[in-house]
Length: 201
Image (cartoon, rainbow, N blue to C red; front, top):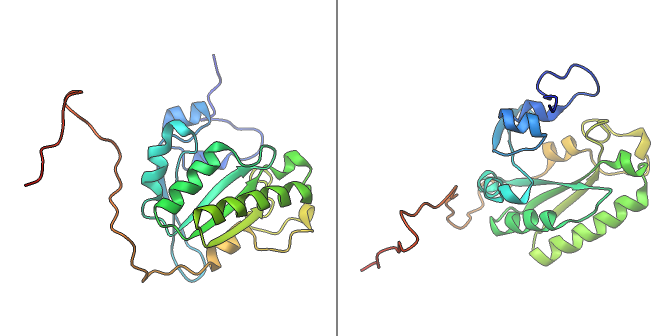
């Protein structure tokens, strides 16, 4: 039987347990539903929506992103830009999110190499350009080790940009900007396969 991660008492802190509230999420080690949390950054209020990354839960990601002013897209440094990275960036652009932070995670798995980060950054910036996302920041991090999440990492002295939290606390967000009307849709239910909406007269 697979050991549950709910009561783990050894090893590094698993911060996903703070937002993954469903038992299935904790047991499988994945995010399934949207979780909302708040953090008191300097000079404002930060509301965080933790959304799933797996393609089978894309609709939940879209629901969580539907009211966001900034999207943080995690990219595995050892794998680079994947199809789900492209999907999430596309959804962010479709929903009118103008600020995207690409957190290039798991830098510890690639020995904190600058060239690996620069390759991922180049690919993500090209993707953002294709999608028309105007404001992009790429940050190399190791969420497991805490590198460049809150405090600057000595293991990546070559990186001179902001940490993840510094960017979240200082990025300008245009609260007065008027966006197109959007309704987040969680699911669509039809009584049967032959059901069609009535025509509007």
